[in-house]
Image 1 (spheres, rainbow, N blue to C red):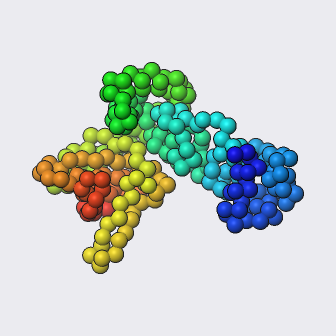
Image 2: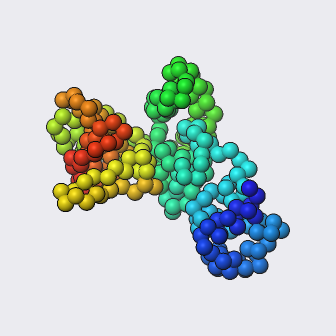
Image 3: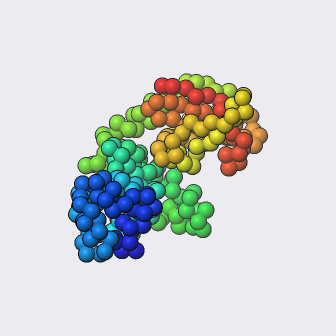
Length: 254
């Protein structure tokens, strides 16, 4: 679609008149009309306002002229996968897994490769093909080319180590020691737990990126431990394959 069609579709889907949209992005109704007639396109600052208002990338507003790719892991980016800056705006350079709330979540290229390879194997690559591809591709991405400039001098890695120590200190029966934590988007791990009253409850935000991992129970069986954490809490649960029949083990404020 062209920009004029994108703006019209987003505006009508949001139930806004041209005048209402104009007020929200500080322009005249005539300006909105010209956008939707294809006479003009919004300037850079207005595109940022429209991006925040409709929660879509500027690339989408412009009719998706570019194929967005995460500059840390190389994954193609759709709007719902794009990471966010500290102010909540979308950062079209990175995915939610690699960049969350203004923080880069990976600092080791080998770790990134180890995380990506199993996903690529599921898509039909052999492990060797996947590993060789990632080894060649990652160094071409901006994050790894500018790592010294973009890195936080190991601050986030220290935070992950602190979380791991706190989790292991809980000594959950049957749960192996946590060795590492990966970035996990809430939408994919936000399980619903059944309270004693029978009501269901979720503890996570679908759009937030957390740190977590999955561990096999030391006692065997078909249930796994799930670990999720951030600066505010630690959550430990168990579940069956594909997250079925989850049970909350612990929810601890930090």
